[in-house]
Every structure is written in structure tokens, then in C-alpha cells.
Image 1 (cartoon, helix red, strand yellow):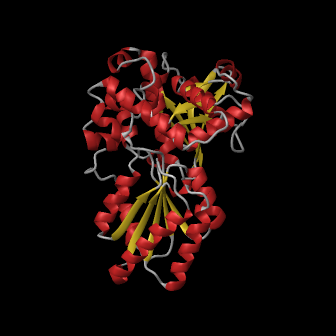
Image 2 (cartoon, rainbow, N blue to C red):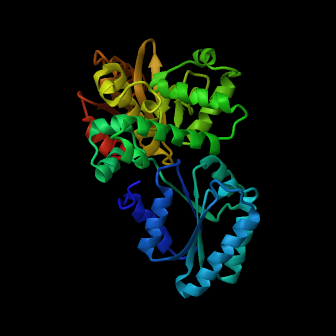
Length: 394
């Protein structure tokens, strides 16, 4: 991790810490995107008295939260009117955490204690469930997305080809000179997320589905085909639930087919999409050089990077990302949001450069915007360097 690089998000986090105590702040995002580094940098920039503690890897209970909270209270009293900040990392893993935090927060509100509280979480579903159940009206969420190409370029001097192959985990950047070392590090990272952040009845199935999805990223795969390749998979409903859990953890999404209305065709074959290209390449057979030489594989990396940019970058905005396919014609990504409908075609993902799917989709659904990413349209590097919201406003 490049601890000296400051993500653009740092300004927003520092701004939160500078506000008077009024809400619990939850910084939520996948593992290894630098949430801890971000909050440490923000605390330093805000020059705030603070206490930081992590749950990860330890058996914690509600009494531990209370002890850490008391440390925070003491720091707040010593700091006077400036108060202090208490940061608890992965607190959602502690049984009964929402009720405990509600009690302590309300005690401080009644006593006028100037202790601001920040929680970091890599389990968005679990964190939000607890916050909404017991802390409604008391919290604000700030999403911490995976690193973008622009950030990896600025922090590590990467070129486009490096980003497409090695992905966007800053902690792994130091290992790319030795590919096998990098692969092992990335595989360990993925396993940590699978074992600590996703709790399913069939962990072996979860790992099989994860690997199958990464190996088939940017491809539409029917549930029947997935069931044929997975052991003890159950039924499509089971697989859909496991895919959703992988998506919540920031690993693998299963995009639904755009239905022309509603929120997606849940029974349709999903388009599998790794949310970081490192998850594809670290577990695959292609070296960096071999990947660049394989036109088909490199095209899937390009399409996966564009898809991940859209899904990661639009999280929390109210936009939904789909794909579309009908009678052999398709559109790589369809975005539905307040600004209308946007169709996105990645030109390098087609061997013949055909855009007939985009034309057919336009005739039927009349999107507000049609974007071609690649040689025939927006240069890939330009697209990946900008926020997806920029293209939805154009």
C-alpha cells in the first residue's frame, strides 16, 4: 500500500471529521481498498485526538466495544471542546454491536461528550442491516470504492496494460515485478475475503463459483451451465444468492439482463463480472506477456475493466448496471438511472467490430446516450481515467 498517496476521497473523509458531532460515520467498502489508510490520513489532516482499534482476527465482544469507547471518551475530555474521534474497524463482526453502540452513542448525546465515532466495514450488507435496525437516523454512510486506473497511475506510475492485467489492489502493486509472488499474494487476499467476510452454508461452493465467475468474467453464463460445472450447487436460486454475496464483498457480480422496465430479469442468465481484474489474472494461466498476446483473453480483460469501472464507480448513486442480449445481438452494458438510459459498447470485445447490437437496442429502447469505448469511440484510457458519472452527464 502506498501510504503517502492521497486518494481524492480523502478530502471528503477529512471534512466529515471536521464537522461537529452529529452522526455516526460508516466507511464501507471491499477489503484492501485502503479504508484504514484513508482514515489514518484523515485523522492526521484533521489533527484530531483519536483512538483506533480493529476487530479483525480477534474474538471480540460487547464489553470490548465499551472499553474502547471509554478510551475515546477520556481522549475527548482531555481534548476539551475539540473533542476526539473513535475508530472501530470491522466492528460489525462483534455480536450485538448495534445495540451496544446505540446505548453508548445515546449516553454521549445526553452527556454532551464530544466523541465522534467512525466505523470501517468490508461487509456492507451486514453493516447496513445493523445500522438500519438499531441506529436509524444516527448514521451517515460513505462508500469507499476500489481504486481506479487514474489512482493506480498516479500512485504507482502504471500504464494501461499494467492496470488491465494486474488490476487495482494497491497493496499488491509492490509485487508485480515477480508475477508468481504477486499471484500468491492476490490469491491469499481473495481467500481472506471469502473466509472472513462471506458466511454461507456451503463454503466450497462459494469458492468454486468465485473461480468459475472470474474465469468467465464478461461472459453470459446460464445457471444450467453453472450447475453442470459446480458440485452440490443446489438450484439457480442458491447460485443467485451466492452471487449476491460475492457482489456485496466486492469480488464478483452477476449482471441481470436489461428487461425494458422494472429492475431486471431475475431468472435470466447472468453476465459474470469480476470487480477487479487482478481476481481474473491471479488465478488464471496467462502470464502478463501471454495475456497481451492472446487477443480474445485481452479483450475480456478490457471489457471486464470497463464493467468494473461502471459497477464500482456507480455504487450508491441509484444507477443500475445491466447487459442486453436478444437473438444473437447484444450490448455490453446498459445503465439505468435518473438521467435516463445509457448503452455502453466496448468495441475491443468484438472480433469483427460489429455494433449491430447497439443499433438494435437503440431502435427498441431509445437510450439517451450511446457510448462506444475503445478504438471506434472514447479512448479506453480516457474512459477509465474519468468517473462513470461524467459519461452519464455527457
